[in-house]
Length: 440
Ligand SMILES: NC(=O)c1ccc[n+]([C@@H]2O[C@H](COP(=O)([O-])OP(=O)(O)OC[C@H]3O[C@@H](n4cnc5c(N)ncnc54)[C@H](O)[C@@H]3O)[C@@H](O)[C@H]2O)c1
View 1 (cartoon, rainbow, N blue to C red):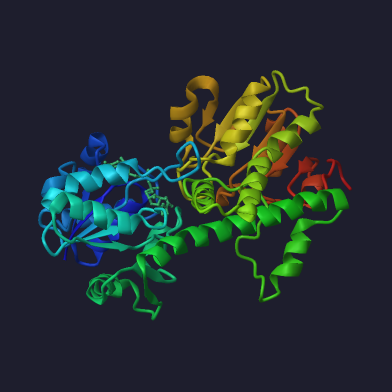
View 2: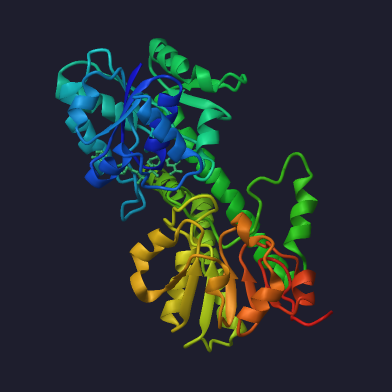
């Protein structure tokens, strides 16, 4: 099958590469010329485990192509996936500027039997509007389907190749049949292919993200409460997680959710609700709790040093919004860093993959370390923001030697309070009691 994928970001690049890997002839399109030039040479604009190897092998097998020429890629394509960004507009709604631009550009080049598929997360009703717009531009009915993407950055290939489910929103059974055939190689373990209306498919994506965000804000709110109540959120989490109705997934307390999806999708769903005069009270609270949670690490640092932060050296481990990615969009680390810089701290950061993206944002306002330990010399404290595996079992003795004072703020509850205390650290975490270093 000849496929065009418009937008070569986290979603478009993974989608295009995986469809090429299953034997299709795929052309990925982007307006970013430098990105396309690099991709043609097998150089990736993002870090996603395993993706570079797969891009290179499909490039050399000539099943995967990259271009900035939208018309040339669309003309032969049976399926055109739209995977452009849909960021937050000022009022929280999804900004569809890129999607409408692409729709206008591709319309004159569509094959009569082409199917345009929205892979981007788009407001409910977008497929219908897109079909109407394409009809206006071409003078004929154009088939539009919705196919929301559920991949997680950091495990995107695994998620795409072995999805829990594939959701498509279609008006015609024939369209569902084409998409079912396309996805068949990825659904060999009998995972469901769920066909529904475009409206339900579009809504499914927002509801999935909103529910996951709700779980995170819920556990963060009760974690903060645990600190006041001398309860330990880790014990509470275990106490509830074994209940099969509750489970463990997405119930880890932390410094708030970030990334390019949860914050914007929770806000976009609220904007949709308000457009129908429905007050999204729970969604508003989820967002509000999260905005507050992103301040929690800075607040703890501020409290520990009694507001006396000017000139303090603070090391930060983890900049990406989660491990296994270089994506720093809406990362809680940025909220922390902004607070530290505004308070006059010297900030020494390390992330295994996100140093470069962070440097593009902050330039020489921060010191960047290639290794976790090189961020520590002279530090008054370390703040752990992202739960990268390499941070989980550090050499505590060595850390103590490097740091000016052995103080750790653990935003992911990676360490045991008793172990940290025994090692001589003053240790703060989320939803547990702080411990003061020295042998207990
Ligand atoms: N990142 C995720 O984990 C994830 C997961 C599921 C769904 N989504 C959704 O998928 C969509 C894309 O997300 P992303 O993270 O891949 O975005 P991204 O910002 O990484 O990539 C978007 C790409 O589109 C390109 N683009 C913009 N305008 C264009 C145009 N007119 N023509 C061609 N290319 C254009 C940009 O240059 C960029 O490379 C969003 O709607 C997002 O909500 C993202």
